[in-house]
Image (cartoon, rainbow, N blue to C red):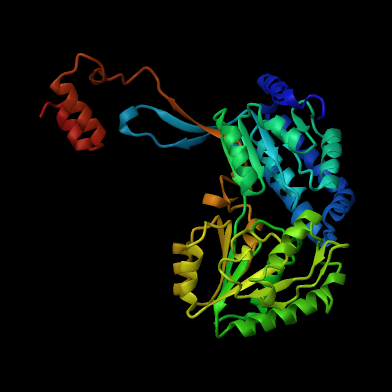
Length: 476
């Protein structure tokens, strides 16, 4: 284990206590340093992502580098406004008074990131933590070692390491970090480890953000532009790290009469995107490692699934690649329908009526995302009203992540808390209520000895009815 891991929270707490990270200019300097890392080391970051995931340069730039840059630029632009006290109204109860909500940093925070988008899922929480004025420790994922090393190197070179640290390592280092007291823990990953993080945090009453996952459904109605829908589903599934994405479509629901058209559309568009032999395509990421490859093959070779493959299914373990694969109506009790897939496999479930989709979705745990392709306004309204999910997109997939004005986070099994844009700042801030009063307007009715007259006055004040207050003052 690296030296100092067991005491890193204590060390940063001393720095935070000195007030350095609260200073607005310090926050700005650190955000500018992050932006410099992104701008000056793009090639190094791309190569690390290629080493870890064989991620295409296009995806590395669009999904990770550009996203991190945009988040950093937004924070720099809006930071002074975010940190300003928010004035709120007061009532007759405290008159005369003024009230504000003051955003203050939580203190010393821990960010545990994951391997599928190892750059942006490390950088964006750090942007929120620094913007809010915290000292922060980043624990990148050991499953993406090249990106972990790049993050450690670059943050060590550009950031103020007295208040921003990177701890590399695996389970022992993460365990040592979780044993310490933090003012917030931000974890991205699976629900199994999420429960471990939550249990560790509970010992210190530490609040957490858990960005998890789940089985995100896609509902495909019949009254749509099928070509566009197919392309957008492919983009959200295989064009996002080859399905290794927390908001990636996990399964499709469509009608029995429409499914053959949908499968044909997938086949047609996928050949355009990835060629006749997708295993040779340079535009598909690899599976991250052999353990995850074997897990996916186990899902695919399940006897309840293997005979229902209608597209794809090819695999190459030496390259850790699995072709985009579609499975039609796998058994409800198959593994693939009961755990998050997190890979290039996509089951399609058929129903008699498209409206039946809502019952299927709500019978499962709440997903991180839900998608609907339809021109039926009533179905859209019913879907939005009745399907609980972290986020939702109508007639597209995954694009809600690109909007900084929308919170990104889960609900139920898919997580708790949210971030992106100002929501990242808020995630690492305490909203402190501040009420200011002078020494005038002191009302004797609030003090003993209590009388019926004082009680009547208090009732009138709390009613907010001006006429009643006047009548009480006049003794009527």
